[in-house]
Amino acid sequence: MYQETGERVMDVTPPPPSQRQLTMLLCSAGRRVELLIAFRRAAGHLGVDLRIIACDVQPEWSAACRFADKAIRVPRADDPAYVAAIEAICRDHGVGLVVPTIDPELQPLADARERFAAAGVWVSVSDPGLVEICRDKLLTAEFLAAHDIPVPHSVAWEHVDRQAWKGPAIVKPRHGSAGRAITRLDDISALPATAPEPMIVQELLQGEEWTVNLYFDGKGGLRSVVPHHRLQVRAGEVEKGITGRPPQLVDIAEKLARALPGSRGALCYQAIISPDGSAKLFEINARFGGGYPLAESAGASFAQWLIEERMGLPSSAGNDWTAGVMMLRYDAAIFVSP
Image (tube, rainbow, N blue to C red):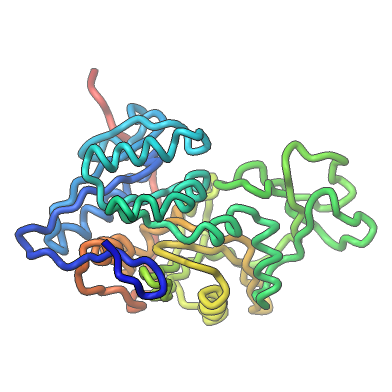
């Protein structure tokens, strides 16, 4: 059911405590055990009986699927049958909240979001237009520059002027994620004549690398901005980090909130603060970032706020979190008996 308020909003009248039950689907669960635990912890705090279904291409090899209440195999996110498979899980198991976690599934789920909503399923994903911007790094740079948000000089591979380019560069896939196929060039003359896929060439930024976790409510309002300094990174995810409040990153977040069309739920952006104190944004992810557990530990529980919204409970979303909280990740293992 919906209320007409200029946009379609789910009617989520708060249930009495005795009826606070929710089934959630964690998509592309993979190794996201910390995220799953964050939702379980949030549900316990709210007195919500939360059942978590996790899906993956190979659930038997997924650590998060082993932690879930139920695991289900689905096609790859780029398979035309993917959305239908997610719809079937929601229908067959009474799912009320869907949380996507990887870039390739964002666009198909965003495109189908209204269809899910009509069936009573809340998909935590931003509007299709925003997802399209975030999934294309060149489009991201062009859009942000047009809205006076500082970004590195970025050019499509095929349009690079080798004579005019100054300084080192970073080469990356236009639609890549998780640090895939990123190459540093100290001299632009080393750029090959052809690219293996659509690529961009970007000014190499020097300085401190930060991720900024953002939470937007169901009406698109920015409720929380949680930066963390990425002290050490492995495979595109922060291994060592610490929360902080650089004002230039908060300023960028507020500009993003005004510029981006239809932000919903968890997003994050990455930026470099140069030695002179200026900052440039070089990537936006329209989903939970890999470093989200650090924001959670600092007191910004996006997981709890999503459950509150879905259940129609009073929202505790806000920007009151602790700076200086450190994360030191380590490897852990799950052992499965035959």
